[in-house]
Length: 412
Ligand code: NIG
Ligand code: FE
Image 1 (tube, rainbow, N blue to C red):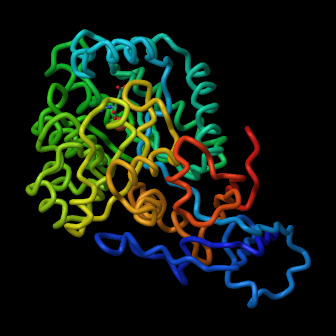
Image 2 (spheres, rainbow, N blue to C red):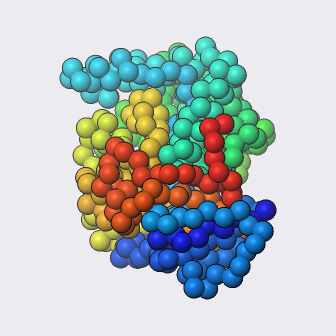
């Protein structure tokens, strides 16, 4: 099966071979071929070039992309896509003045989601998550990470992870799974008892049943301490789960430091970042991942993306799609916020949402950019003048069609 896209106004993110992640000033580099073609075979990129170099491809299904751009699908490296209920009542409470932390302290927030998830069946959870999966694909996402963390008992965490495993079986896009038993402390058990449950029951079960690639902890004020985070991540490593953590959303929690110390693949959120945190990240392979729709929705300070990039850091962007702090899985809006609120240039935001995001979930061998052998997963834009129109048209959509591994996606 061959697919040929021809007359592409701009083919965005092309490389002769797999590129490295981009840090600092490199984030502005977005190699783009004008008046280009892209050829895919059996779901993989076979070749690309300018139209003058195109040889006849008689057997290929051919699409004329005149006036349109083609770019890699987004990689959303941080979501909580499996959940049982929306939390719009808490949204109203926040409008009326309560903070996210006050709502959590009153038993709302993550504990509210946990109560509902514990009463939901695996099938119900699967159906809701599958719908959201197709929703994000239609908005341009071509790979996604999904966390547990609304179970908060051994059986319910396992139930959530089983739902993610089932999604993997039917999903047209790659999914990575993250164990987040350390999302909040449930009220029913002592803190030390829950820690023991995470360390000695949940992590071994997750590994035994091969239910996750990563281990996450919400390391922040009012949630897990730095020391608790270290213990959990060390135990995760022992069972083959790499760390990828929530850090510094609500405070200078030391989460970034412990994440880097534990060789986390990424540290995510980072609304609270100063010189110390930047320096620690500069001396590491850990990818700082920013979630601006959470800052937007909770009215938090945005992470200092400009300062981080100007200091030489790589940045990835993700949605944090969840019912409490980011009830949107729209990477286009994340890119718009990155540009409008965090002063990232459109090229920087696109690199952070594709190439660097692929590194943040270890999919760089097949996703995030175009090179021979990569997955032919791409966005065909509506007619536009430049890629700046994606963030410029915030709240709308410049996407005409999404292709996953060479196939046009229709709603599943
Ligand atoms: O990434 N910060 C911790 N966890 C989620 C929010 C979860 C929730 O409120 O349901 C987040 O923002
Ligand atoms: Fe999150």
